[in-house]
Image 1 (cartoon, rainbow, N blue to C red):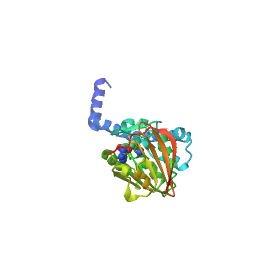
Image 2 (cartoon, helix red, strand yellow):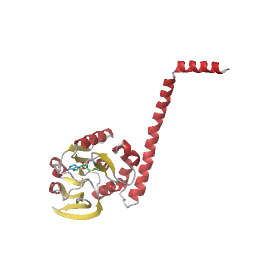
Image 3 (cartoon, rainbow, N blue to C red):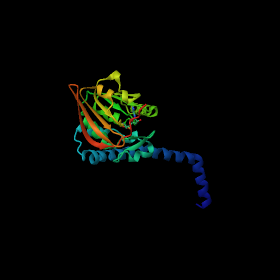
Image 4 (tube, protein in one colour):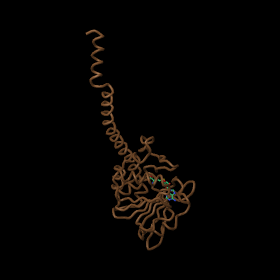
Length: 246
Ligand code: SAH
């Protein structure tokens, strides 16, 4: 066949099947394949994160490790930062706020010693990631976020991921959540300069609270309430965003 005939044949093929349609078809096929690969990659990175950043640093509780292996951290960070979601540092989540470094999330969770039936209060919902980790470990999670944009976004995402045991509220964490108090565990993921009194009051007897306290840098504190006495232990120095005063 000479060139002219080839061109006519090519024209007829394109006219019959539609070149645009052909490309759209290929594009759809590639899109079908990509997310599956991406999820598999993230899952591999998550496994590595748990092994090298969390287990290697001494977190032993099987349930905490399992939760960290399960929750898809990349879905809680902006698309732009997703590829860094399993790295050993905090990441921006918008509104000047950050999602904590994975190890700090695991350590704080571990300190709460959750067994499955505790009522937990989180102050500082942020992306919702810490709340999701807690929800893997106990039945009742209440979380308060002061910034409406973040509260809404987290609530929507947690719902989309199927979490039914997390209640999100937009409000001021300094006041705690009187309606559902007392709490068996309280976790504060923003830093007040002093331990908020309302939170101590809303901690159940026998309960545990983990909270970073200080201004520029903070001390991560574990507070235990026994027979209405408070015992405070400093765990490690940390850096958190400040707890906003209204
Ligand atoms: N736990 C979050 C990280 C939170 S960063 C996560 O897993 O993504 C700290 C969050 O605390 C921010 O979203 C900030 O807006 C919120 N915050 C600051 N001051 C607060 C206050 N007084 N009450 C409730 N939330 C507060």
